[in-house]
Length: 154
Image 1 (cartoon, rainbow, N blue to C red):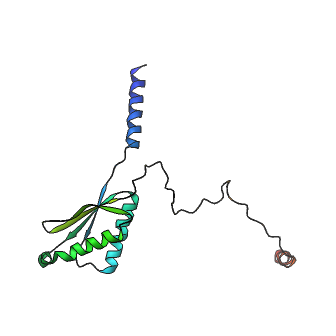
Image 2: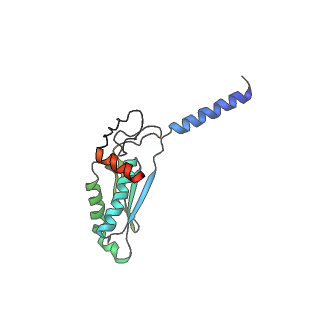
Image 3: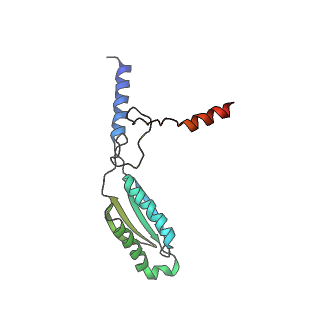
């Protein structure tokens, strides 16, 4: 075996091992204690999406000024998120105050899929027009439709 062939196979093995490697990323969502309901629902939807993709989520509540006195609002917000996501996520780290921020880390219950695998219950519609597609029945034209078509061509 020549050196060029050896180098090519080593590179191929390295690429294959990189492809199979599963990297877990941590996505962060920053919130404020005085968040409105609509903004909360938007951020909550993003957090749910991150967890469904298999990523960990770090939730950060940022306090400013006198909000530090009322940290219970931030804890209530984090508890609400954890309660609503208990089917999709587990609490990896309970709420913890670090300076002016309160953080909590959620990890997904389902593991992240490899890039080549497909999800069992995806919400895509089946592909139309393949060989598995059912034939579409053709209705015969009535005599009125055919006579109207002939009149328009005249």
